[in-house]
Structures are given as structure tokens and as C-alpha cells.
Image (cartoon, rainbow, N blue to C red; front, side, top):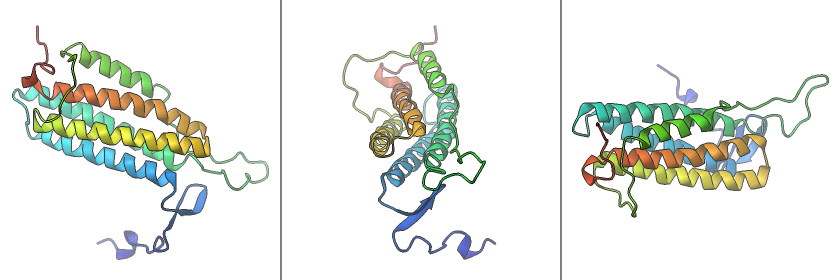
Length: 203
């Protein structure tokens, strides 16, 4: 069994924590806000993925397709989390003599285009409404809409972090979050087949 101190270290009892390259960072720093929002976004996606896995829609193929898409997004969000957490690596202290500064984790170069491709493919199979969409047509759709709202919050937090720190890594994260929120919206439509807007075309 894991020891208590592997989970509870007491190191943050004074309201400070650390990230790669940054120590004694206040827990209300904007970087922790971004990380918290991204963590919540992944958790919200996880709730929707669980609902989809339970067969939340008539026709198991549709729910399974949505589940796989959400799982793919969660894996990408994990990469975004790592990129944000390491975006300031090596920023405070100069690099050791003769060695380059530490670099934070990088996102895949094709992350934005991959999201756009997945969204375009899904949009070709559903009807896009020309009116305001009220969440709640199905439980799964409502959960995905909630995840979309959290994603938008994470994007806003990232904008503020980029204004403060000006990191190239954060600049790369911004379009990824922007595309993800659009993709999650389209996915929510697909999860509400009875609305007419999200009915997947089979012909």
C-alpha cells in the first residue's frame, strides 16, 4: 500500500507550490488557474465518456463513436496540461555553463489540424442548427456542453497567463483550446440525435 506521504506531502500548506523551473509559486498564480481549469475540463470530459460508455444513446455505434472521440480529446488535454506545467521550465535561473536551458513539454505540431480534421469529418454527418442551442436534450449532450463551458474558461485563463508570462508554449496552447471548444460543441450536437440538429446522417 502506498504511504500517506506519497499523496499528502504537506508541502503546500503555506499556500505555495512549484512547477518545473519555478519554486515557491503562489497557488493563486494564473498558471495554477489554467492547470486547474484544464484538470476540470478533463474531468468533465471523463463524466461524458463514462455516460457514453454506458450506452447513453439509441444505437450503440453513435455512443461508441462519441466515447472514442472524447477519449482522444482527454489524451490531448493531458498533453496540454504538461505543456502548461512546463512552460516556465528554466525561466528563473540561467542555464548551467555550456548547457541549453530546460524546455517544457511540447504539444504535437499537428494538434490544431488534427482537431480541425476531426471536427470537419463529424460536421459532414450531422445537421448544424441555425439557432441558439439549449443544452439538455440528452444527458450525454448536456455533459458535453458543460465540458465545453469549462474548456472556454480554460482558454480565458490561458489568455491571461500568456499576457503575464508571454511564453511561446502558451501561445501554442491557445489555438488548441479554441479549436477544442468548437469541436466539443459539435460533439454535443451529435450526442442529441432527437433534437434534429444533431441527428447523424446515415444516407
